[in-house]
Image (tube, rainbow, N blue to C red):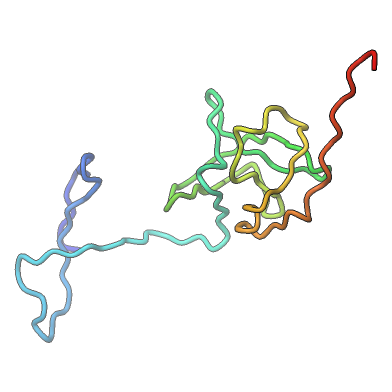
Length: 142
């Protein structure tokens, strides 16, 4: 790169740069533009979850994890980069944890029994993997 603009354009989220590239066949002409994706680093072990799984609760960021008893556990997490509808989880969950990716608004409290739906198969889960729903509590005096 021969030039990098000193400031990012916040409206277009672009950063003008100039690069020197080999052009032995003369296919590139002065004034041409191109789109470049610059990868600054790669992390093969990074964990990502859908943005829909990440919740802001005041000053903390949380996800809901299914614990061993098929119940909801709210976990505080540290997030990293956001990329294509996904967010990197830097701290707070492990690769073995099962994170609720959709329907977090339906999980009202920690300890709530979690069930899978037909849509769960897009995340590699089958509805048959879910526990049976809890019976409704009986009303007193019946």
